[in-house]
Image 1 (cartoon, rainbow, N blue to C red):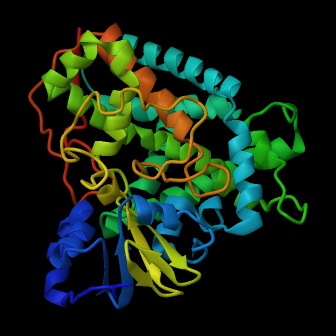
Image 2 (cartoon, rainbow, N blue to C red):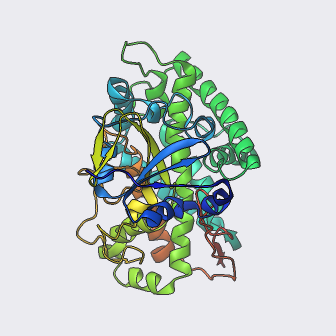
Length: 418
């Protein structure tokens, strides 16, 4: 086996590396022309990997663990400090099972029906210029709350908007000091709100027998058959709500590829039934979302002929894997028909080449349980945007900064509807 090549990153190089954003790890790989590379960043040695073999090993609990791998600042904004993403072994299986039991075909049909109704109502109300990003944020928040068993009927529009903004603050809290502060504040407010909902559900379990996220987490237990602490249950309820609101990012990126690249729109519109799911998969592959995910090796592990020692802090380059020329032809091009014949329905095989929301097996591994919600969401939005409505497209900034996490068009996709 080959020793891991190392890139010496000097302090003066850090700004340029961080400005590379989604391409930062790719630059390290390019410098040594190797799929495995190590470097010291901010006094932390990191081993960076990408590609199909790397993903297969990375999502295998025999080789890697997630506990204590994610930097604390990320936990304080994005994921929460006691969530399923931080667990391993039996604890992970038990907690992940709660999420997976919510994702039944019937419940996915319920979600899609709710979303179609809410999105249709929201689009019908639009007159003049509006931001697709902002519209999607509110529609998705309202939809996932209703689907989860949360009644927003007693809240004002301003209160609903504020709660939705708290979800956004959590997943945008990595770009600057002010964004981070907003993310911490947003998480504290959101967790307090979720705890109040869960406490009410525990005291008045009217719908406890229904397969609703609010009641599932209100009654969830750990591996010792103890009721989850209210704080942990709140983190997990938000792990249903926040990622669904975050699909807003992909909706905005969908708007970019449809309305800024009219040839894509025309190709999809001309053969929508055959191309819709392929278009959605390619959208998730091609555009960046979060750039990487960390874990710690629990034994020596070989990846692409390189030996990674036990106890190494390893980051899997998600963006790099989705653009790996070793696995995909013309990986840096958007091909609407790339996944024709390969699209996923409600039951998936293991996945390691296109890992926009994680890889491997859903129950056993750290693959996002909400991937089905994502696919149904993008199906509904693509159908409405292509088939059901006609928009004019104002002049705007379509730029997607590669050093903004997650990134989306700067104008948030402006559309005009008469």
